Length: 327
Ligand SMILES: Cc1cc2nc3c(=O)[nH]c(=O)nc-3n(C[C@H](O)[C@H](O)[C@H](O)COP(=O)(O)O)c2cc1C
Image 1 (tube, rainbow, N blue to C red):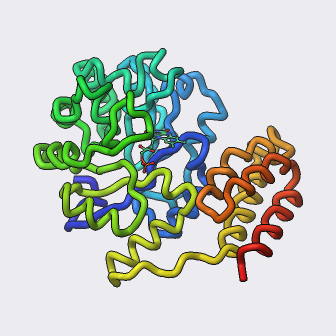
Image 2: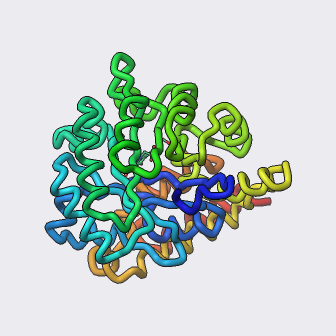
């Protein structure tokens, strides 16, 4: 069994989120109490082609362990080759396979959630990867199915378990649902009940209260938090505190939140690879929008972020917002 599930531990995962859960963001989530983290997905054959940008994406520090690297693709031998390279170079604590991404560019390659239309192919990919890296645990992340008429979470769950996956994360929505509508927690509960490997539930967990409710309803071995952590990475601290003391701590002040965002930005910009490529902050706007989304007047901030080019511009946005809301 993966060590972070042993002795009744109930790990909170930070969900993999492309272009947002970078190494610096992950570090902050770790400090706030995220137990297990996974890099955003990277294309297996691009890893084997030595794309330096992707190798930067999967980088992590020892402090962030247990860390998984998530790969996607549809060709079992390419996936196996990428997994071997990852094992040799990074020794991640696990390699996670993405069978959930709904993006067109991924579906076109017959990867991500497209694979759910062909459960036996899912099995071949898991088998190939697990056989290629016997020293590294392999896990999978799925959605419930392609659409409401093709719900395959139970079938795929059994397949990945039989082919060597050591845990399964389920985002409780179909591909067609995208990111809206309700997550199907009853189905996640059924799969968790049937499988012997740990099932990690995912979909719309927004608060410490959600965690308690969902844990009781599903008996999942752990839960995974995505978008709620983007705008409010303190959610891990809140949940941990609530599980131990039964109360949710006071949220960080507006100044504290901006301080975190400014530190985050400076740290990212100081990373050697990024510095060579990006001389200003324009490329960071999507990340900054995500980080400020849950703040008061987030639409106004979003507008102001549209004019941010240099770090001092971001400091000005922060100062104006703090003056308005931090009394
Ligand atoms: C911006 C963004 C990027 C995402 N990238 C990935 C990814 O790289 N790999 C993956 O398995 N899921 C990805 N997801 C899906 C999340 O991991 C998660 O399953 C989904 O957001 C549902 O959880 P939530 O309701 O807590 O956000 C992404 C989601 C978002 C919003």
